[in-house]
Image (cartoon, rainbow, N blue to C red):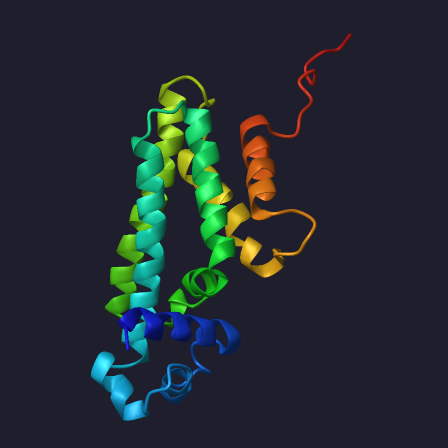
Length: 193
């Protein structure tokens, strides 16, 4: 039994039942272990939850760091970051849902540990925006608020996105990118002719 198998099964159970309603017995049954044998791999639900959250954030941080290291112009980096994030949110909905909805179930000091890692991820989005502003490609905006808006638009996909829906996650990523890069105005909003 691999630890990753336990974490993936637990993520699915936490997504379906919620952290508090899920039991160690549920997780053990999902991976075909006796409950006592599960404790050979993990100490308890809090450890499992933190491991899932760390795993999800580590994947997202690696994706975003790769985008930031690229030599693409800022607007393309933003598009790549949105593509990568929407891909992660939709391709592993169990992991994404637990990351976005169950983090409040962590007890201290594990919650503080998680928040530090989450803040690192959010700082990477801010760095991406700041690079665009410094390059003169993005207009000066409130970077933290804009980063929260970018993340918020994408995060809520976990509640409404359907794999067989009207648009693929790739199409949605392009729509989100266009919205953030170009806004809603037609371009002649200031003309009074």
